[in-house]
Image 1 (cartoon, rainbow, N blue to C red):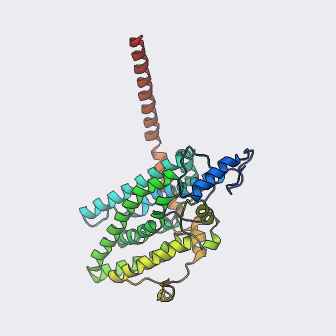
Image 2 (image 1 turned 180 degrees about the vertical axis):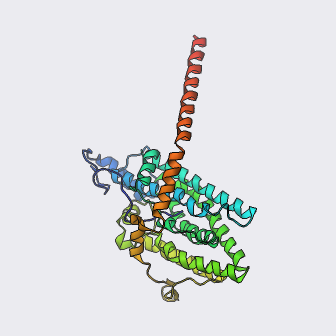
Image 3 (image 1 turned 180 degrees about the horizontal axis):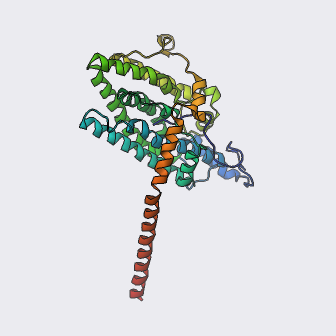
Length: 350
């Protein structure tokens, strides 16, 4: 799923977030040699690793972006998960089940990447369910029909591919490496969604109408999920300066439109934008302007399903408390046994 450059994304706590030496209250000024080495690593398109020195602002920006990405993967299980029991065949149920399971795995990869920066997974989850951190706006829209499952695969996962493939070259090593597997699986998800829609478009008039309706409803939210225009996205500019992300929101949005238009023509659907047309001079498509006020409302918590999505995540977290407690107790018991065995072995060797 996508990483959204939304201005409403919560930052890490404490002080300035501009990455200059001395970030944060009471922080000691950075060693100029460390700052110089960091800058040279970024300029040389090399990777920062967890043990390397990094500015506090770089760390905070990464935690904010990776956490939002992880939250989006986990919340993103809900819209399609609602259709697992209603999918029309065992094959379709199995495909959908596998996809939702993949999204859970993506979330775990990303939470693990955030932990390499010193973030605590439990704290990130608390921030999400308390509304202090965001997730992608696209998952606050309802899946009204089974065709929505295909359109999510085509649009949402297609947008994820545009957004996330460049993240495989992110300047932060654990994030970049996590994205390699994520992107491979997102590519499968996109193809699966498009294949489902092709099958429906070869069906009845009612099925074709269902696909077109889903396209009409998801097109503009899909364009918004790249985040606000570049001029209104300070987080995006900061991430690009540090090469955490490689392309601006507007550039990624343009790539998505150019990729999707020929796919829509082949599918036989009409994208709901009267301003959409090929610009021969630019060699790219012109397209209309999304309703940015709608994006702001959704990321501020006033989307169609914001409350329901977060409430379900909160319930799942609370219901799973006993599993986490049992796993922690089991790990402690195993560690104690290993320690006892090691001590006994030492005693034998004396």
